[in-house]
Image (cartoon, rainbow over all chains, first blue to last red; front, side):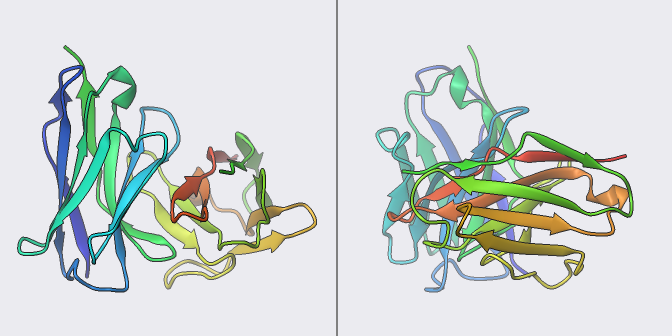
Length: 117
Length: 111
């Protein structure tokens, strides 16, 4: 059974870079049927698409975040990563990684990242 | 790009049927498939409907999905409501550049 687990700092200073890694077990991220994506959810609010990466390395980013986001993958470790530059308090959210075909499934358990000095 | 608009909240009694709508702001609702996710408090979302009207294994047939081109909307219908259905529900689709688009979410209260 496929399992995804987010990891990374829970606190990031304003203007710095948020970095998260998603470790995938039970399946290979090199599978060409799937994309691997990041979604976030500010406290008490709805879901926001951040972007995704295909097994080939092609990336697709939310236009509203494109200038600050990088998603990459390390097939040797079966992991993919998110970097978000120049963060502000508005970037405080639970960050989820997930596998994406037509549906987004499964999701990781999510990790809360707080942006604060 | 387009937006998906959902009612902020709906409520219904156990045993009844409720329908949650998801209206696409521009472009046809039929352009790309619609998915529905259930999110209980403190948990990650899970799929209850994908590709407009398909149920993943393990999701009861009380959950059904449809699209209506005349209203340019998708709907999630839950029949025989149970208290365990109380959750937030999100619709989701894709734009032409492979970006996911989520609705704002609907809080379902079963009272």
